Length: 245
Image (cartoon, one colour):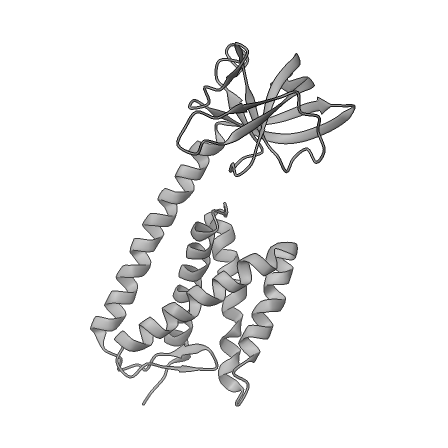
């Protein structure tokens, strides 16, 4: 069986690239295509493990160090997802590529491997690139509706991101409400509680902000609803933001 290091590196680089892209999509993380390629290049350096015997665990250790360098405190979130996706792809490819096998966590592809298996891997890689580009474009469109906010509450200033939500039609005593993630403001004084009239039937604790600064304009005495389990720091009210954004 003949094995070319170039072919083995190319196949494993594609698998690592796919794993990084799928990790970003699964965790809803925005990574530019250039960063994905750069991270994949760093992670593919483990190809030298082909020259080490009896150290199958070494790939996990080296990747853990690289992930600490790349993702810092978020390593405990991204690393397990990447490992799961990568080895799922490796085992899948080893089953469809003729005579391919796994050594020290690396997929070894012989030069006489079946063309059909390699073609399937190549087509899946191309398809994933298209899906990832669509994902990145969608993230860019969403970011167009994200705004930097400064809110003041009980002499404490908070710098957060607000999403202009056209579906936010919550009002309090006739005033449009912005919705803030409960995790943003640790302790607050509730002035009222209202029910969110939708399928979730959540309760909203209403507070009154000293001011809200958005797009260089300050709004005084704004009512805000504190709510859990929302994706963004704050959901802006389109009616309240009329003429400002």
